[in-house]
Length: 250
Ligand SMILES: [Zn+2]
Ligand SMILES: [Zn+2]
Image 1: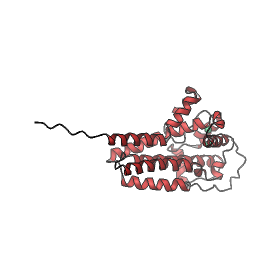
Image 2 (image 1 turned 135 degrees about the horizontal axis):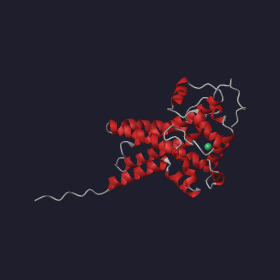
Image 3 (image 1 turned 45 degrees about the horizontal axis):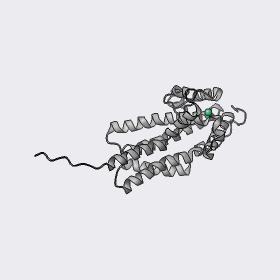
Image 4 (image 1 turned 90 degrees about the vertical axis):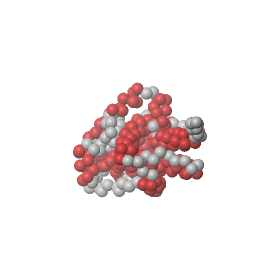
């Protein structure tokens, strides 16, 4: 870790979502307000599964992009992401010297856009997606933004730079990952991959149990785009099944 590159009196860079992500998430939020889950239980379930999923996804994303093999990945987008994750191990300061949240602008934009595209297809074909999917997608995007925002704050705090009091309080309370938790990752590089509190270090064993090709497959399967598309496709196919009339009872 590089602790010498930053002047503690230097203010942090502002942290805010990128413009593409903000616009697409606003559309999903409007959709979620219009198509809400029915009842408190469905709403709580959508919230809990979105949090658990985002925690798992961010673990897998981090584990996969930390793999050196990705520096020569066939897809340039993966090479760029892997470079960014692995450079972060040697220079942690860009997370608060720059707008770190802009780094996931395209990721969040494409997640929200995937939902918007499936909603448009459902509308065109006069079918509907599960009512909880809009809220679930919205929360996955928001938990992702919260995770990267807190990542920036953890590194700022480690360098003695002030962070908002509420965030410091939630880190100390254990509601958000703390600098102490994250520092372990920057010391060992194979532990504490998590960006949300969630299951903590429960997933840390995945990279040692799965070889590169299996982790690669898990990386694509765990993408929010994949989950949204699978749920939407199944839902539209199910809705398209012909409804057989019940035989009349004599
Ligand atoms: Zn890492
Ligand atoms: Zn970090």
